[in-house]
Length: 139
Length: 108
Ligand SMILES: Nc1ncnc2c1ncn2[C@@H]1O[C@H](COP(=O)(O)OP(=O)(O)O)[C@@H](O)[C@H]1O
Ligand SMILES: [Mg+2]
Image 1 (cartoon, rainbow over the protein chains, first blue to last red):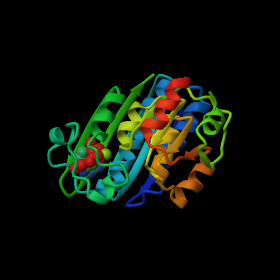
Image 2 (image 1 turned 90 degrees about the vertical axis):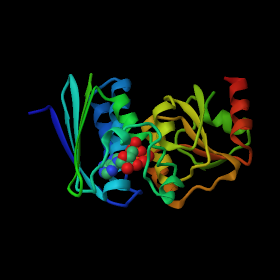
Image 3 (image 1 turned 90 degrees about the horizontal axis):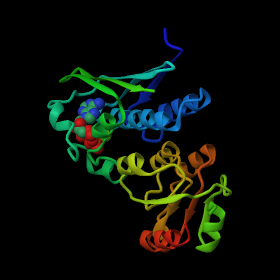
Image 4 (image 1 turned 30 degrees about the horizontal axis):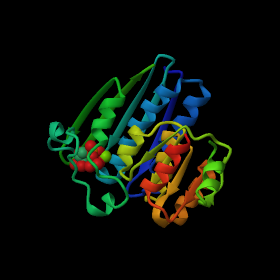
């Protein structure tokens, strides 16, 4: 068991609610006294993941486990899956539609940012079934 | 320099007044949210034309001192509500990001 376990549902296609999970995790980590740098790494990765779920996968769920020495996040969706993960991981690669770009997203920086701000990132994905991302930030 | 001092200095419109005594320690210009979120620093004054709810979320996560909407870019109604809930200062100006950021840079 971790010190704290949190669960969030991310609604699909609702940009107004994207960021709720990361905002809440930010508050919790702050209260627990984590360093700003650690909090930043966690919330950047989580927000990018949340947004990807909304844009690309019709929503999903997030589980966060907080321990004194590490924060783990599992982001699971039942979207279309990612056909070529290596390609998706490249900076600038994006399949986001124009209406999403108009909102300031779809720069193809999400997955690279997640990689950059976490200590470990694993993606399990299957076409037509969904995508699960396992992220870990060490303290 | 505090958010209020910068607002007065540049005649900015105050769209959402949260904590105007907050100190500005730097600035960041940009509209691509992923880019801003990973590069803006805590206590930055963020110059952008993105007045949507996601910009408010990014400002919270990146811990910016305030958002300045440049060239009178509009603030969405739901973004305004969110900013009020989450204590995000939002200002606006008819000037562009270059002019405003130069002015801030000159006094920081
Ligand atoms: N959860 C997901 N489900 C399906 N496809 C995804 C998911 N996350 C990312 N992708 C794919 O990977 C690409 C790159 O993602 P990302 O780096 O976050 O850039 P962006 O979201 O700006 O397009 C996306 O455009 C999309 O094609
Ligand atoms: Mg993305």
